[in-house]
Image 1 (cartoon, rainbow, N blue to C red):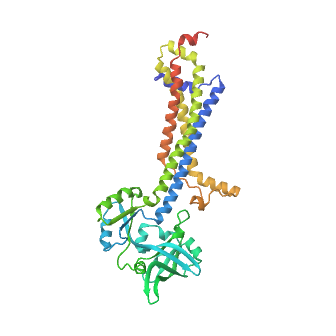
Image 2: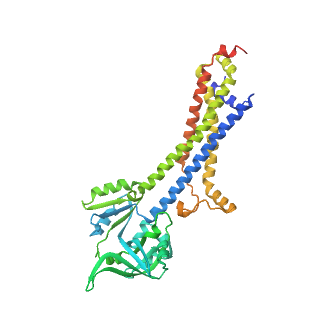
Amino acid sequence: MFRPLSLFIGLRYTRAKRRNHFISFISLMSMLGIALGVVVLITVLSVMNGFDREIKKRVFSMWPPLTVTSMANFVDNWHELETALQKVPEITAVAPFVNGEILLTNGGNVQPAMVNGIDPAAESRISQLKEKIVQGNLENLTPGKFGILIGEELANRLDVVLGDKITVITPQVSLSPAGVIPRLKRFTVSGIFHAGSGFGFDMALAYINLNDAQKLFMMGSSITGLHANMKDVYAAPQLSTQLQNDLAPNGRVMNWTEQFGAFFHAIKLEKTMMFFILLLIIAVAVFNLVCTLVMVVNDKESDIAILRTFGATPRTIMSIFVVQGAIIGVIGTILGVAGGIALATHVTKLVNWIQEIFHVKFLSSSVYFVDYLPSELLWSDVIKISLSALILSLIATLYPAWRASRTEPVEALRYE
């Protein structure tokens, strides 16, 4: 006798040629439906992960995850604070900055911007600004030269190129015999960067040397604050709360979630809802599995009755059809995982090939932040999808298997 008996008979029913070819067809469709649902779910979540990765890459390449300043918006003796932050294990790099709102003018063109006074060497440790420069270089921001680094979109609106002079107007004013006049300073365009579309970095940001910024805003040796980079950017809210408690009462700690948190939360919520919506595709295939097993139970009533007369318990009969349905679910899930991994890892090349063949453009960087279809396969998503498909398949077998276990041998064999 084969042990366990339910596993042997369940495998036998799966492999055997059925007299009713329609049942075989429905069973195959159920298996392919589960596989298709798993493929779609893995691919869609991978694409959403890709978009999430690209957006975060653009944000954190230009924007630090942690900012330490004060309620007065300036920090004296900031070297002590810098040393204290460098001793925090979660922080990998620290850089001082001076920022303020300005107006940039060239000819008749006027554009508002946020200027950041930076130390080029320290800035390279906390951001990827250096890699974003398309003209000039970051080292051109030397003290006393009054060079300025602006975004590509901002340069186009001001109609300036590398080496041109532009006028910077600050909110501070100066007293003169003629009265109150705004503070003006001529800067040389020392570089132009391109951070990508979507967040307005190219249009709203400008960079100058830290010493030049201190002179421009009349801050002496003080700075606005310190930018800090972290090992885990998602730990920024907890660390900012901890640092806020450790700093003086007038200290202020800000993290990236205060400005971009709602945006990334919306992406995470969208991914979660997409998972449950696309899970319905697997649910439809599982419903076909229920119908398949119900028809198999009706077709095998006489076999069930004979097994019962030989001493098979209702639990054994139930296990037989659970095994049969589980096999369909497992095979469908394995096929889906294999197809989903293959498609998710090649979807970028596939979409690019389709665009080249049909001369169409599916994605525009002005709308989707990127001009290609990104994809990032996460094994946590694959495991979650696989377990969901298997659990739904097992749940689908319960009713038909229970119905089979309730078969009465006398009633089933009456007309045989």
